[in-house]
Structures are given as C-alpha cells and as structure tokens.
Image 1 (cartoon, helix red, strand yellow):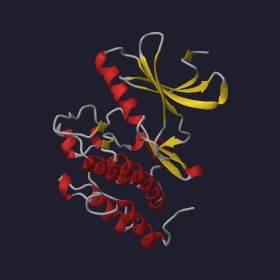
Image 2: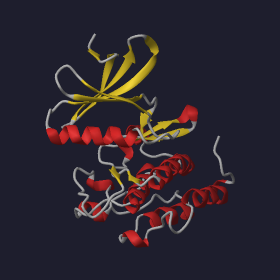
Image 3: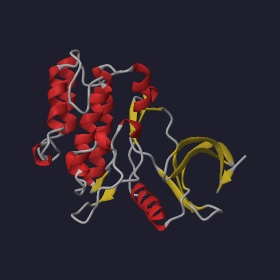
Length: 255
C-alpha cells in the first residue's frame, strides 16, 4: 500500500491540475484518518499555494472548518498538506443525486457555513472559492464543513489577485480580476444556497416552493455591487437567517 509520511493511502478522493487529494490512515493508529493534499506539479507557484493554504489552516479552529495536522515534503520533493478527514458528501454530489434540497435543509446548512465565514472574516481571512463542491454536509452531526483553502487570502488588499476561481459561483468583482473581499464570500454563499434549493444561480431564479423570505435573504447576499450586499458590517447574518427559519418553519433549529 502506498505511504506518504506516517499515513497509508486508502483511496484517491479527487484530482485536478494542482495535484491529488487522498484519504489516509495513520500507520500507528487505524482510527486516525486524514485528508492528504499533494502538489504533484513541483513548481514554485504551486508550492507557494499549498504552503499558503497550510499557513491559513494552521490559524483556524472551528467546528465547520477542517483542522490542520501537518505540512510535509514527500520523497519525490512535492509538498503534502495533511488535515483532518471530513466524513460526509459534498453538496454538489447531493444535488446531483436529489436535484434539490428542502429549503429548511438548505437554511440549516447555510447557518453552519455562515458561522464558519464569520469566524474566518473576523480573522481577516477571505475563503475565495465557496461553491457546492467545497461544502461537505454531515447530516448525522447536523453540520456542514467548508473545505479547500487553496484560493484563500489573508487580509486581502489591492495587490491581491483573483486567479483560478470557479466563475459560476464567483462574485462579479472576482471574475473581473479584482481583489477578493469578504463580500465576495457572501455572494458565493448566496448563489450556493440558490443552487441547493433547486434554483438557477446564473439567473438568480427560484422554484415556486422556496419561501419568499429565503429568496429575499439570498437576493440581499447576491447584489451586483459588493457594498450593496448584506454583510457583517450591516447586521448579524446568522441571527437574521435564524429569524427567517423561525418565521417560515416555526423553529430556529432543525432536528
């Protein structure tokens, strides 16, 4: 069995131009699983991206964010980021199978993601690539985890460049090549919510069964101008969504 550092590789999770991501198990304790992200293209740019991701991950500790374990150098010279393994399915795979989730399910998933975003933004970190494939849903734990910090920016400024973003779920300022903002994450979350409820994230349209208050909430997150979007500067987004859940579904917390 292939081994990287102190981990035996169980299976390949994903593969892209950047490299490969594996599920691994610690050689001394089978109960310790990890996610290993390996940079296959040994270039300075790719190494810098992975090291930046590791640096950001090492600073965060939140229930809805993966935990940093280590950054090592493999035998072939590539870097490998080791992080906690998150059980569950990505939101895009869930929608691929079920076509849409009930609006109440989307609201509790979004509530968890808002908690993670608030935590990141308070630390000056912009995630930069929020989309369904970067959200792992854990129904048994009633949690949703925001993954993949590959495009994250710490304390973004005018010198930051927007490269590699997923255009469908990206904010207009990102697709135009401008620096990523906290407002950009908010926009992407709004489009992800629309998509998860069976709507069209491009047209920003909704199925008839999506309650109007939820539609209005998503619309407030996805306004064209970043400064027009609802953000932490204007109100507590988590509290607002909680109020909407109570108004529409009769409870603030799903079970």
